[in-house]
Length: 396
Ligand SMILES: Nc1ncnc2c1ncn2[C@@H]1O[C@H](COP(=O)(O)OP(=O)(O)O)[C@@H](O)[C@H]1O
Ligand SMILES: [Mg+2]
Image (cartoon, rainbow, N blue to C red; front, top):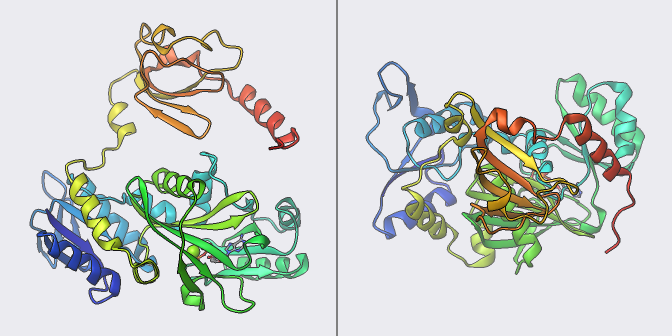
C-alpha cells in the first residue's frame, strides 16, 4: 500500500518505528507534515494540496495529530475521508476523543464503566456536583489536558471549589470526577489495534503522585490483561471510531474504569515495556483494512426519503419476546435489523432464527413511518431509567 503518516515529528520514536515497520513490509511510505496540507474545495471533487501542490494518490493515511493542532489536523483527515482514503482513526473519532467531556458522554451511552463524572457551569451547582460523585477527595480535569497536565486531586470540597472557580474565571471548562482511590496511582494502558489489544502495560506513579503518566515520572511494566479489561478497551476504541488507540483504565474495585481513549498513542513506552512490535501490528492491520475506507453509514442510509435508521427496543412485555427474528413481523414491514444489542453483547447481522429476548435493542434500517410506533416514547424511557437508578445495586 501507499501510506502517508501525518506527523509533525518525523524524528520522534513513534513516527520512526511506524515508518520503518511499513518499509520493512515492502510498503511505500511517506511522513507528511500535517500543517503543510491545504484543503482544496475548488474543483469538482474534494482534493488535498501538500506544500502547495496537488497531493499524489495514497491508499491509506495514519494520522498522528497532536493536541495543539486538533482542528486543522482533523480537517485534513476529514478531507482524506471524503477522498475515500482509508484511515484507521476517523476525524470525528479523533475530535471526540480529544475532549474528555465529549468522550465521556459518548462512552457512557454504551455502558462503558467509567469513574462517576459531572460537568457544571454555574457556581451554585459546583458543590452538589462534587457531592454527587462521592465528595472529596475529588479529581478535577481540564477538558483538553494531556500527559497529566490539567488533572488535579483536590483533598477537600473547599479546595475543589476554589480550583474550579479559578479555572472557570480564566474560561477553562473542567470535569469533576470521583477519585478512584483503590487504583493507588496505577493505571493500565491498553494499545488497541482493530478488534484486539496488541500490547498492554501498567503505569505506576512516582512517590505520592497520583497521576501515572510517563511524563509525570510514572514507571511502566508489561501486564497480561484479563478478559474484562480487554473487552472494555476494545469496545471503548470501537465506540469512539478509533481502530488504533491507547485506552487508559484505572483498576477499580469492580474492574476496569475507563478514563480516556487516546487517538495518537505513543509507542515508545509500551514497546519498551512489552518488547512487542506494536508499530508492525498497526501497519499490518492497516494493510488488511485498506480496501474498506470509512463510510458514514447514517448519512448514506438516510438519503432515501422516508427511510432511516432507528433503534427499536424489545420490551419485557412485548409479544416479540421469545419469537424468532424471522417471525417478528419486522421483515414484512420493510425493516431490516442491522445489529442486535443484548446487554454488553452485540450481534451483527442477526439471523432470522435468532430468538428475541426482553430488553434487546435492535438497530434497524427501514421506513420511518413503520418504525415510529415501535420506538418507546421519551417519557416511558425516562421513567424506566429513573426506576433503574433508584433500584438497589445488584448483588453479585
Ligand atoms: N478519577 C481518577 N481517579 C484516580 N486517578 C486518576 C483519575 N483520573 C485520572 N487519574 C490519574 O491521572 C492520570 C491522568 O489522567 P487522564 O484523565 O488520563 O489525563 P491525561 O490526558 O492528562 O493523561 C491517569 O493516568 C491516572 O493515573
Ligand atoms: Mg491519560
